[in-house]
Each structure stands twice: as structure tokens, then as C-alpha cells.
Length: 499
Image (cartoon, rainbow, N blue to C red):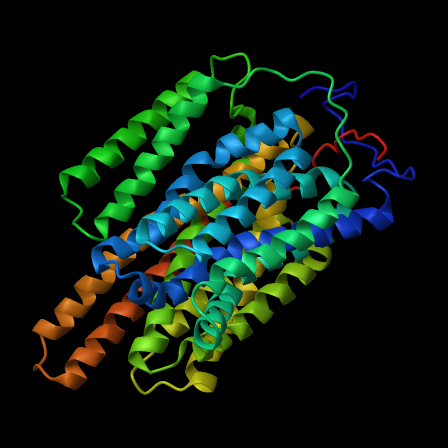
């Protein structure tokens, strides 16, 4: 999408009446985008809690259970770059509204599902429309807030919702499953989508489109197949092994297709992912930081949930409540670090230090035992985790879209979500193996019995948390070497027309 503005200069942030750039409307736009972002992020965990009840109701096997989760991840991860580019080419408002309507419709079908096949199809459809919705929301935020001070606040609030959504999903999933029905973890999305849809139709102005370049079909097919193969390969590890031919074939094919994609993007006239988006050090380092967040956060939500429920006997609702201090830490750091610390010390120091804070929280949690108490042993680590993740996310989200031309904002935003999805898929497969190996080693080296079996489970869960701490240390080192400690340049604002 091209316009008459100079594409190398940041937009002036027009404030005329009736435009999305006006101060009053812009903050209401943030509310709309925040509601949509919360819906997408909590949906990644809200279904996990309800899965046993859905399995009992619909009668599907343990072997098929993973496809309720994997179906969503495959569609979401593999189509994100396409969804982001469609927003750039055909208007982010259009793709945002389409994503909301489609996601709500798929949620209704999933909630009403009478069979396993319909439930999985609905989850795949949710992933497809989320691939339109998620990058559109972040790119709308990026091109709407171009004044540095306001941008820092807006990204802080948005990233707080992105980080807290997973924990809120655990609590909401437990409440809905226990007090109503597993089906309501799907139906609840309709409420979120309705609020966001009304706000979008009332507040989001249409972009001034003068030309729509052609879509990069070869690049789209190649990268979608590459991400699909990588995510599928790692998902398949959980039910087979790292040496399984399907696993190895998928991973090799995915890496080869990624290499082909890079080769294609350097040669086509209208690339799906212009290489300038990722070759900038600030953006490249920020994308890697988001990837590391995806790897670490899955070990928090997945294995710490297992520990609380399986090892120390928390109910699903109590487990969700237990994560609230981490949510508070994310919200506090996300809303205070960007305006207070970022201008003073720079993105390199903020991201690196925040990763180390999160790693410290992980290390504390890796010391958990069967008799650990919540206030003394669990909560301090969760608070540190929240503070660290909030600092990284609010800064990395800004850095990943820093200085992006408005016509690339959608694909840059999609790359953030892709990094989180692929990072989560890799870590889930890797850490499932780590947990299994640690538990098996403990069982074989200790006298058998109920207490030994229970402690073996704890050993497996805490081993994954120690690895998560290691991921965050690597993230700190990557940020220290890659991210320049210069002020983050706002994205170019998008020209708009009056309502």
C-alpha cells in the first residue's frame, strides 16, 4: 500500500477532528486493540484447562487430545505473515474487523461442537482468523501512536495485556469449566469480540489507499509451509521422539523452506517480508527477544501449572489465582519501564536487565519441592518473573516496530507473533523431553514408592523451570550484543481519511 507521504519520515501525528490521530480517539483505539489482544492471548491457555472436561464430554482419546491445541497453533503460526501482509495491502481496519468476526464465529462453532472433528476444525478456524487479527491489532497500535512519550505508554499497556493474557486465561478457564461448562471457554470469546468490533467500527478510520501492490504468492506459500513444518515437527515430538522420521523430515523441510524463503525475498519486487524489516539491529534483536520470551513463557504456564495441580493439589481456579502476582508484576513493569527507565538507560540495558530479573524468578521456582509453600516459595519467583517479562515485552514490542514504514507495519507485527508461536512450539517439545528425562532419572535412582513417584514429578517440572532460566540468560546476552542502546524511533504514522 502506498500513499502520497514521504515514506522515510515519521508521520506528524495529525490531530484534526474526525481522524484516528486525535488524542481523545487514539486512547479509545488502544482500549479496542487491548480487548482484542487479550482475547487472542488468553485463548492460548483458556482451552488447556477445559481440555479434560471436553475430552470426557466428546469422548476422544488421549492421543487425539493434543490436536485441539496443535490445530490452533499450526493455523495461527503458519498464516501470521500472510495475515500481517494482507493488513498492509488491503487495510488494517478491514483485516482487524474480519479477524474479529471470524474468530467469534469459530468460537461459537467450537462451543457448540458435538464431535472431536468439529472442535478441531473450529480451533483451526480460530487460528486462521487470529492470524489476521493479532498482527492487525499490533500494527494499528504502531501506526496510531507515533509520539515517543505516548507510544511508550501505549505499548506498555498493550504488552501488559499480551503478557497477562496467558495467566488470565488459566484463571478464566478454571472458573468457566468448574462453574459452568467447558463450552463457555469458547463462547466467552464472543463477548470480547463484540466489544472490540463495536469499537473498531466506530473509531478506526479507513486508510488512504492509492495503490495495492501484488501479493508475493511464492513467498507466502514457502514461508507458510516452512512454519507449518517446523511447528508440526516439534508438536509431533511430544507423542513420538526426536528421532522419529516424521519429526526429522518436518524439521529439515522447514529449515530448507526458510532458506528458500529468504532467497526469494531478496529477489522479488513486492516481498512478503522485506528483508529491511529484520536486518535492522534494533528490530532484529527485538524479534529474537520476543522469540526467547515465547520459549520461556511456555515453561512457566505449562509446567508450573502441572506442579501446582499435580504435585501440591491446587484446583484449576486456585492455580489461576496463584498466577495473579505474576500478572501484577507484568502490568507494573510494562506500564512503568517504558516511560521511566527506557528514555534514561536505553533499550539494550532494559531488555538485558529485565531478562536477568525474569531468570532470577525462574531460578527461585526451580527450587520448589513437594512441601513448598505459596507465600514463601512460589509467589516471590512469580513476582520477579512478571517484572522481568513486563520489562522485556514492553521494550521488545516497541523495538520490533521501531522505524518501520507504515506499509511494513503489519508484517513486522506478524513477525512478533510468529516468533512467540515458534518459540513456544520449540520449548514445549524440548521441555517435555527434559521433564520426562529428569523424572525417569529420579525414579531409577531412588527406591520405588508413592513418595518417590510424586517427587519424580516435581523433579521433572523444576528441571524445565531451570531450563527456562537458561533461556532468559541467553536472551539477556543476545540483547546485550545485538540491540544498540539508542532511542527507539517511532513507526511511520499511517495517513488516514475522515470518518
